Length: 254
Ligand code: CO
Image 1: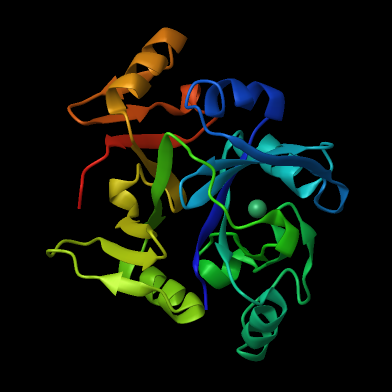
Image 2 (image 1 turned 45 degrees about the vertical axis):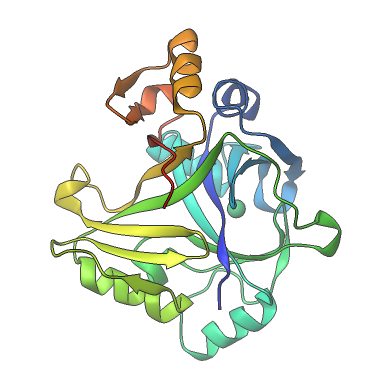
């Protein structure tokens, strides 16, 4: 039913400021930017390999994203899967009794889009999108690609089962332990117990892979981005990335 993670949405105070990190320091290419009055946002999509990162700035305090910002601050907001037929997918989900925000598609930055209700997906807000023909399918060269989204869950197997059943994702065997990996296109969702996610449920972190890890580390140092450096992996602290735990690892040939 779904082909790939189309994008991960991040709420920010101001898109122009967030460009300073996501576009200028990380080097992610801007795909498209627009006001979407229907959703009360100014939004921008930045390329990250097979997926994109969507920055969302509320157009006012009295909008869903404005209220999210006031309540939670900047950070991960929603997950969007690409599907070939968003209208058909929403109809099928409605017939299955799945709670939806949109029963019919509307126009968004990613194309024709519709949102499921977060109660349908273990508290995670999920968007489905079918890109428009004239948006093109080509992937912009990006120095980082989105590898996986980490989701904290009180009950890992129940949350994984919900995502598998709604979106027909495949589960990858992991060597024991309480985590579950679900693949979608070249990306993945990693479901972990809340105890491993700072006690938080829902979307808790993003993992990206850097084509040139040394160059990226140097760019972060130059910018003074707060981070924890490891060997072959670093973590940008939420204070440096507009509220997102960002794990960045060295590219490894499979
Ligand atoms: Co979106």
